[in-house]
Image (cartoon, rainbow, N blue to C red):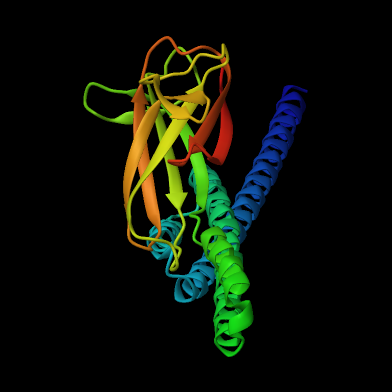
Length: 292
């Protein structure tokens, strides 16, 4: 009787061990399958991201070949794409790395979209200016043949050239930053952290404009209607213009990037408005930004 009892216990133990073994095998199989699926997914994402980066780099090649005004900016942004592609191709494709690379790609893509839009505007302006110059040449030729209408035609040509020679101010941006003691600047949207406003804008290429020094008066108005910066004024007819700072630019018919900084403290929360005026106090560009 005792032997039978021992045999029953042994059989029960064997059954339990067999079930545990089967469970372990099943778990290991599932874990292996899940791991394989994750690796396959990450590999696919890595390959897809690499192909998208290559396509964007090729688009930059086309834009650079077709544009001289924004060549430096286009090459700089393309270099960032190339560097990111190298990182992606060298990576082992873990989840954290892929998330970081995709976020960086989307940021670079947004910058590229902005440059594409800016490039389109410059192309349209160049086409308009070329058309205006062609028309001017035709009118001048006709004016030589018809002396009786020369005065009227010259007046029309003068107005056309003056209009075409005006400089376009594009891509006006303002970034709030925190200035570290080391000199490093960290971008922020918090009013309490900001101590410098970085203002930048682009003066477009214009082959028929006069060269020389150009002055632009920049006005920054905070959410409480206060004008920041120097708060100096210039006369504008029977009124005056109060500005935050004046930027003097040496213009030589080429695109010029302007970068200025306005230090400050205790910035107010809310929406800020930024206006750029030329020497005649004519508004040539405006934008707004918000500090939380």
